[in-house]
Image 1 (cartoon, helix red, strand yellow):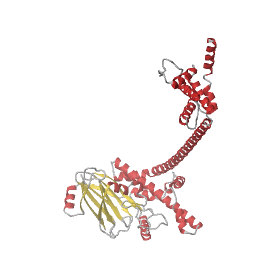
Image 2 (cartoon, one colour; image 1 turned 180 degrees about the vertical axis):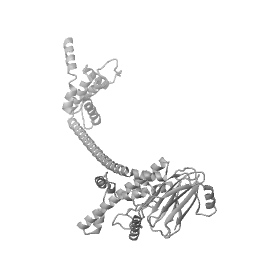
Image 3 (tube, one colour; image 1 turned 60 degrees about the vertical axis):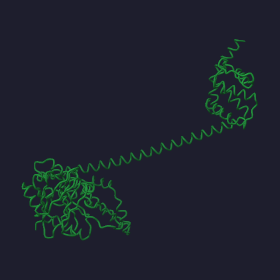
Image 4 (tube, helix red, strand yellow; image 1 turned 90 degrees about the horizontal axis):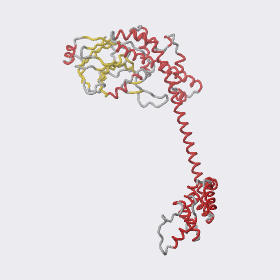
Length: 483
């Protein structure tokens, strides 16, 4: 008999690993999860949807005790009272299970509950379907999120590649233009600032950027005129022509510029001849007359899109700074201005119909100051010299070097008006660089300069103290013209 029990125990032990895969195949759940669902179903519905006999309840409780605590052990069993009949019956059924494993007890609980309750199997099937449906939705959501991320990454990569290509073309074009104009601008910078390589480099950089923007502006105007002519020939409606002509972007123009640029021929670039003449310090009289005619036509038509290059200014210094300050302070000049820290003062000097050239002189006490001159291609509304003060942020927006050669007004911002759109404010005139802004050590000597009128307009003398965080500067200046 003992041998038979050992054989039976070994057989049951050998068969113990089999239930989990059988339960998973039969019910669609792992054994422990299936037992948890079965016990929850029994606990919630016992006495309600489930009506079991006293004997069946004892069997289920015995399986539950065996699955939770293992085989019955008398030494660990709680003591029973004399009249605790139910407790004694539960222990007896628990002892009858013998040494079966916990997994076998779980499987016995599930099988017995399935046999005694017909509603248990539909309940497990509904839970399994709900789980599968939830899993399917989660997988679908994850797949859609993955596809959306991939699309977004592809779109961002395409934008980056497109932006990189456009920036590469822009740099190649600008480098090619810089190589062609470097020698001319270098000669001009050496004449303006002999023995000062840093100021020469700043001036060369400003001139090269101005030339690049002039080149792109004229190319844009050419493309815009071509598109308008094509639209007018195809569509007699002028509004449609304007709306289509204004949708040009920078990428095709860059490609056309790279194709049109001939690296061996300087004359092929629009505006380069005028810029070279300005850098070398001369301009034929008939060219100046031609520029004045262009400016007059632009003023009559209210259109300043045609950019006109101007000749460079002459700048020198003189040592009599104390005498100059005394004369200006005594009223023999335009006056004295205190420029606060972080501020920029703009002196607007209109051209005089009887004058040919503007002169300026300025000096400061103890500290340097930034100085530059621009020319606004606008017909002066009066002959009065006015002074405007702006903080560093406003002035920085006005004189950004990336927009100096476009139709940007240093004092009032962009004039960008779409063709065909209603005009709510008069357009602002374009501005050209005469002298770029940088710091001058005008506390040791008087800075003097002159510039021949390029046409009718307003000179903007910029005194920049935006770089100073704490110090205010006292400026002595005067401006006059030559007949």
